[in-house]
Length: 175
Image (cartoon, rainbow, N blue to C red):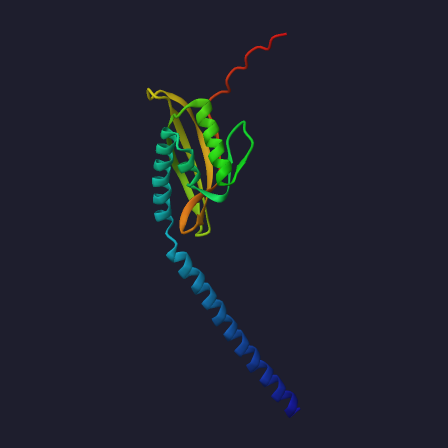
């Protein structure tokens, strides 16, 4: 009986010790996670996105497809309406060059309406307005961008958008 009591006391002390250490380890993990979360500044990232959006609009107006491609990650996906997905920086550069060849260089204003995420990936939901050379609105719509840190900079990782304008009427086909 004395041996059984000794084993039970030993077991209870061991269990209590393990539980205390487990809570301490869990507490350390939670503290590290909280500290990492506290060092991530989403408001600062939103300012970076806002300023990059201004640069993006400027590059659109100048027809700078190479500069635009540099704002994207090396494995980016650019998903414009009525077009296949452009992949990677060279694909993005080619897609913009094609858009400029087809439509010229419009004015573009991007507005980030929502931004959320972590230090690994940011989601931006916004609206855009496109204008011609005279400032007349020619398109408006919405977009979703995913931003990813690459080479120490936030870059566009996924970019998809579409117009709020009605589709252009189709020309009648000749028979």
